[in-house]
Structure formats: C-alpha cells, structure tokens
Amino acid sequence: MNREQIKNLYQEYIVGSYTRDDLVLVAGRGSRVKDMNDREYLDFFPGWAVSGLGHCPGPVVRAIKKQASILLHVSNNYYHPWQAMLAERLSQYCFGGKVFFCNSGAEANEAAIKLCRLYGRGKNKYKIISLENSFHGRTLATVTLTGQAKYSQPFQPLPAGFVKLPFNDIGAVESNADQETVAVFLELIQGEGGINVAEKDYVRHLERICRERDWLLVIDEVQTGFGRTGKMFAYQHYGVTPHIITLAKTMGGGFPIGAMVAQKEIANLMGPGTHASTFGGGPLACSAALAVLEMIERNNLISRAEKMGWYLRKKLEGLMKKYPVVKQVRGMGLMLGMELHRPGFPLVRVCREKGLLLNCTHERVIRIMPALTVRRAEIDEAVDILDHSLKEFTCLAQ
Picture 1 (cartoon, rainbow, N blue to C red):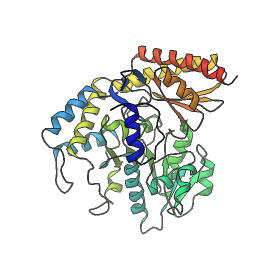
Picture 2: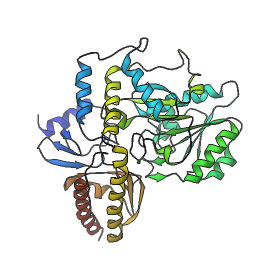
Picture 3: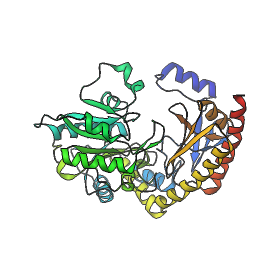
Picture 4: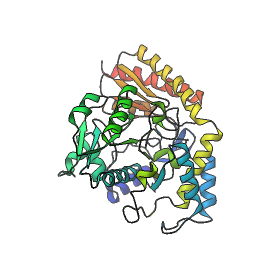
C-alpha cells in the first residue's frame, strides 16, 4: 500500500476529527521515527509525551510481549497482581493515596470530577474552578472544565458547575469563589495553553485557600508526570500536597493507561458502583507501566530530564538571541515552549521538511518535549535543524 492509498482509506473510513500532517509513520526507536519511504525524523514531540521514554523502549516492549503470552485482560470484578503492584508503587510516589485506573487523561479527569462531586455531596458544594488556557480532555465534562472556549463552544449547552478564572491570579480565586465551590483543577504547566508555568506563590496560596475553605486541590499531571519536569511529578517542585492528581501519557510508555490518585480518606468516598472502567488497569497496561517505572529508576531518567532540559533550554535561548522573531523561551525540565512574535505553524512545517518533528500550540508557541532518554547529540542535531529552519522562516516573512 502506498501513501496515497493509505490517505484515501483514512478519507473514506475514518472520522475526520484530527488535523494530520502529510506523513505516514511506520517505525520508531528512541527519539527517531521512520516514514514509509524509510526517511528518518528526529521526534521532539513524541505523541504529546505518550512516548516519553522514546519510541518502543526495550523494557516496556519486553514486558508487553511477556504479559501478552500470560494474561491479556481481567475484569475489575476480580483481582490480579499487576494492578496491585502498580497501585502500590504509585501510592509510594505520591502522598500515599489510593488509585483508580482507566485508559487516558480525560478519563482520569472524569474520575476526579466525579470524586469532587461526591466530596461535596450533602454540603451543597459542587462547583469546580479551572483556569483560563487550561486543557483537561475531550469528553463533555472535561472539555467544559477546559479553560479554552474553542474546544467546548460547538457542544453547548454544557454541563453546569464549572467556573473559569485567570491563571496565576490568586485575587481572582479569592473574589470569585462562593459557598458552592468544591474544588480547583490546576495544570502546573499548561501544555495546550502555551507552556504557561504556574508561579510558586500562586500555587502555595491556592493550597492554603483550599485548606481553609474545605476545597479539593486537583493537579492534572497527565502531561507533566513521570519525570518530564525534572521531578517524578510537577507538584513536587512547589512544596504542596494535592488531594488528587491525574495521570496518563508517559505512564504506559506508549501503551494506553491512565490513573487518578487521591488521598485515602477522599478516595474512600468512591464506593462500588460510583465509577468504573472496563479496560482500566488491565494486566497488559499495568505491566507496561511497571516497566516504565523500573526504567525511570534504573536509568536515573528524572535527573537526566533536569540536566538535558537545562541544556536544551540554553540552546533555545541562544536561538532567541539570534532571531528576533523568537519572543520567549519558557517551561521546566524537558517540557519547553518557544513563543514567537507570529504564527508558528509554518516553522513546524519547515522543521518537518528538514527532519525534525515539533508541535505548535496556542498559535505562536513551538512546543518541544523530547523523550527523557534523549541524548545530548540529538539535542544538538535538533537545535541545528531549528536554527536553519528559523533562518528560512524569518526569510519567509520578508
């Protein structure tokens, strides 16, 4: 089958809910992928961090192969050891909580929304605050929670009980909340919103307000989790303890899995029948996630993300000094954004033509999130391509 035949099948049989680059990828290893013409690309945005340990990481692939020959699926009406082991490990990493397993970040956030509503039941508390430019998923509830109207506007009327407030503005929280508020949802780095980083004072004040007003603090770690920011979870940079965190993406090393982790006394509100996920926490997914954790620990990838992140950031700041079209470089660890003074989609296209895959979000922010296993030489190669692409991109506007 050639590229045009594949594209025609997509056109005929697949719902057109995605904007797709004109690229057919067929293989990947580490920070590189190949198209069907055997051309290689350096992937510095591997699936919104799903392939956060690189494409086809060896330990994860071996764990999946082994588990696939033993047991693929178990109903959550029964027990199995892999879910138990993974839940224990996640609890040990984050405030000793209990875990609900699902298949994606949106599902994890759905579970968190329902748990917040359960917490407020009987207290007439149900409203959930989220922040402008946030992104929490594509289901009806999570797209309503998301602080970008462009994602939710086509689906009105939307569910009630969601309040959007400005990011990094503690005064807005203090003045707009009421007695019906039950929780605040927060991304510490807004990915889809343009790599906006939460200020430490803001987060700490927010935790204090939640404690004083009996609100739940929910931190969405779907994209920031599992070492991406130079800590296992981004909240660990801030000296706060959330009531709930939500996880997915890098967690499965390329295999679908998500989770909500909640402090035990809150998690216990979710009794039998209150929520479920048919495929959530199956043996195959849990085995993959256990291999991810082992790989992160064994290869010291959290420290590596911090070091490689600083190296990449300095390189990007060098490009900012060289090219006036670059407005700012920001982010944390290996979750970086390069804001431009004009729309960045043409730059992403030029980079792709030269063999580098990146992402443009919020129209003018180039999102750069290489695998935690990225090598210094690969960063040098990527920055060199970006350098030549910026030169061409700058000329395009003249």
